[in-house]
Structure formats: structure tokens, C-alpha cells
Image (cartoon, rainbow, N blue to C red; front, top):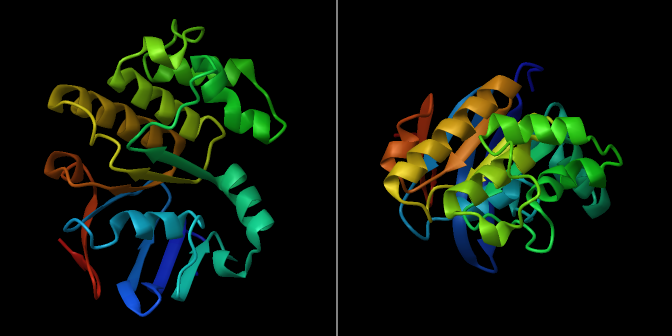
Amino acid sequence: MSDTLALEVTRLGKRYGSTPVFSGVSFSVAPGEFVAIVGESGVGKSSLLNCLAALDDWSEGRITHQGVDLGTLHETQRAHWRREHLGFVFQAFHVLPHLDVAQNVGLPLLLLGRPDTARVQQMLDAVGLGDLGARLPAELSGGQLQRVAIARALVHRPGLLLADEPTGNLDPTTAAQVMDVLQQQATDSGAALVLVTHSSAAAARAQRVLHLTASGLQAA
């Protein structure tokens, strides 16, 4: 794998028992590149993203991040890799309701043993929530919650950012605003961004759009 690639996927496949989800998936992503993955419902887009995050196992093929073959890592090593190198933005936000906004954003740094209130405030400012750090998630709108999730995903400066339908629960105007923040923050940090989406508007922002089918990925 080239040192200039953030992620390289080679002939990846996943099955549940004898039922194939996808197979023959190969692509690479460079640092700072934004790639969107689209496809029909049920084709395995979220499953693919979970494999890229080493949250799910895959049946065949290889995933390499900056020279590290994720398939060779045991679960504790995978968890450490995620903490150090990965940011994940979910459709359902997954913010913790009992923590305030600043505590939610700072959680990745806390887990790494590197708490940094200045960095947390920097990220809150960057996503337009600079004065809302003391609020609880229940006091925020859906668009604001997704901004919290983006700030949390990037606060520890990961090299790889994965986003699973991050605008799926938002109205079109709010979705566009959230995509502006996501794209800008990924660009500013130099993170490779892989976005799974049903939204043609979100996919149109990417530098490359790939279409996932049961037999692999093709340029859309």
C-alpha cells in the first residue's frame, strides 16, 4: 500500500452464513479525499462502513489503514486503532444524554487519556456551537445534535472519517448546513472522508461517487 493512501480496500466480501451481503469491493482513499458510497437499500452500505471501522468482521479480502492490516488486529487492538485514528458520524447522532455538549465532544480525548478543554472549545466554535457547551443534548435540535457528533468525531484529529447517512434524519436545509460543516471540517483536518448516503445532494459534494452492488463497487 502506498504511504499516500489513508485507506485501501481489496476484494472485500461479507456473508451472513451462506447469504452474501457484498463481494469484490476494492477502492482506496487518499488523505483529504471525500468519497461517497451510494446504492439501493439493503445492498450492505452500512455493513461495509462497519467493516471499514473494524466494528464488524468481513468474510474475505483486506482493509489496510496507513500500512496496518486491520484484519490482523485482535479486538482490543481494533478498539485502540478506532480511538486513535477513526472518527465515525452516525445517522442517529449517538450522543450521550446525561453528558453536556462539551463532555460529549471531549469524550474521545478522555478515552485516549488526553483531555483538552481548549481543543473541545475549538471544535465547538468550528461547528457553530461555541456557546452551547453546557447544554444537554435534549435542549438541542437535530441539526445541532449532528454538529455535536461531527465535532466529537474530529476532536482527536483522526486520519479517517466515516459517516453513515449523517443527514438522513434532517430536513433539506439543515442537511445542507450539516454537510457544509462536515465537509469543511474534514477538509481542514486533512481527514479522508467516506460517506454512505441515500442523498443525491450529499453525494454530489464528493470528489468521487461509488455505487455499491452485491458484486462490488463501480464509479457512479
